[in-house]
Length: 152
Image 1: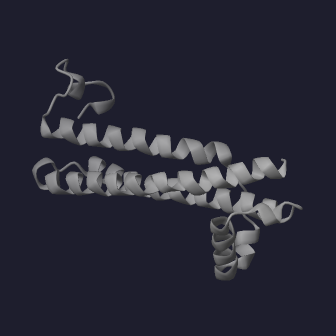
Image 2 (image 1 turned 90 degrees about the vertical axis):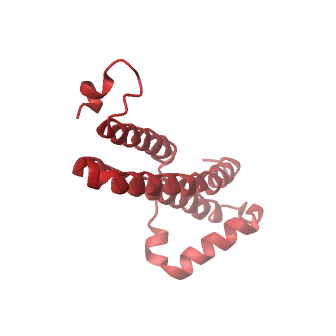
Image 3 (image 1 turned 180 degrees about the vertical axis):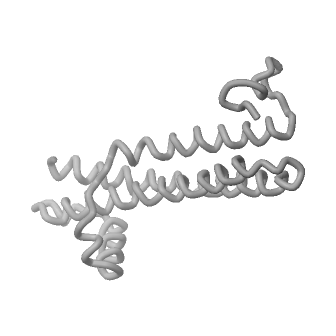
């Protein structure tokens, strides 16, 4: 990969990782919603799935951070390392000082890094709608809550 592409990839993943923050907040909100209605519904499955919503949001941040760091490491090894932004240099140096061995062993996973946040959105939407079904809210008007994926 050319230094220019490495730079763009690292910059993209450093920015894209922040989508994990609103996903984390919405995942925690989904968990709190499921936990608050649990005494009425007794829906253990929805409660456990809502914990998964929070964890996949953390994963979306982590995989993008790791991919960005891996691209920064590759860029640092090229002759264009002086083109790295101050943010890239700071993040890379911080990771290297924290755990050098693990940081040097990072590999970029660009496809997974882009797909995991979308998976988190889909998962959180499913869990939120499932908890609504358990409460008896039929959001479609067609009996979706009594059959199919939302069947309870």
